[in-house]
Length: 138
Image (cartoon, rainbow, N blue to C red; front, side, top):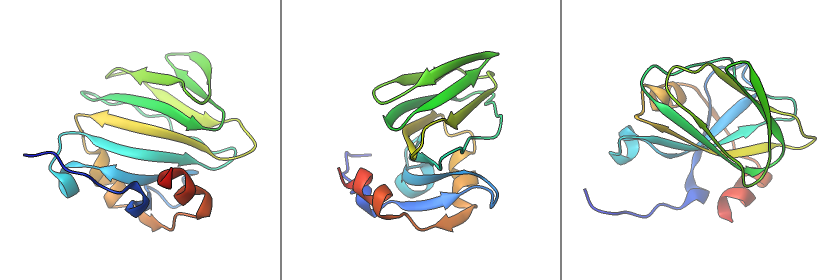
């Protein structure tokens, strides 16, 4: 495989489950890009959060781009904000929640994929709004 370039502004949005309060701008994944990881901008509506989840073999990294939140992992709550990196090793149940007044945006990477891209791609397409596109556009 050789290096390649993608425009983040062209990313498509997905919500895994219709009742979820977070959604994803899919940037890189094994199916669309032949890479062994999944990389998204995860977007949390005000008050939104992930369902409790864990990954058996994958590590997950969240880099906070914009907004305020809280990470719950292993019974410990940690406030997170722009510039913070959160690393979740395999086997640790976690929840990420938006505690701010606006949206929370994280660059989220899961490696290896462990079915994450399939969950996202099989979800409901979501239009990305002007605020989402502005963040992706830089």
